[in-house]
Length: 116
Length: 112
Image (cartoon, each protein chain N blue to C red):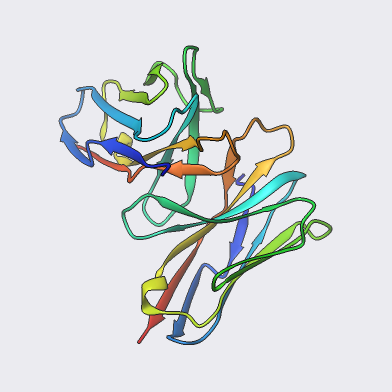
């Protein structure tokens, strides 16, 4: 149980385009999901907390108009990177709090974004 | 700055040996968790230890927590080549709303 999926797993896009990444909890409902960004050989940096039915809470330094988050249902959160630039190239990972709202987070497999 | 600092940054051992990774943090925590990440993949939860616990075991994993020193260690006994991965500690802060702050990670390589 507690499986989280992400789609797509890899995406290559041109500079200036927008890219949407989906995060789904497959076998449980997730009122809270988290979006992280990870650069090569570095740790995960929390970008924002996504709450079902309300606005996301962004971490300091993360542009909310750049990284749009929508948590429209109890099993789906989306992250849209708007007007992507090469510096947005990174590994984006989502997670969801477990089915019993425990402290453990269950992670998706990640999405590798390359902006040309 | 990141909450957790881990050492060593990289560790290379032979199969069958034990691997110990350390994590230090700066503020009060509610819990500390260890996660594993294979290259280019998502994270897998290994073990959670609460702030009022001192030691926890799960299979070949042993985690300790010393809140007075603000540090934790992860011990993997009888390591296997399949244990090769990056290991991260993550702290759930007191009053932090279930957010996790990740450490810098330790890259473990277990050689045959």
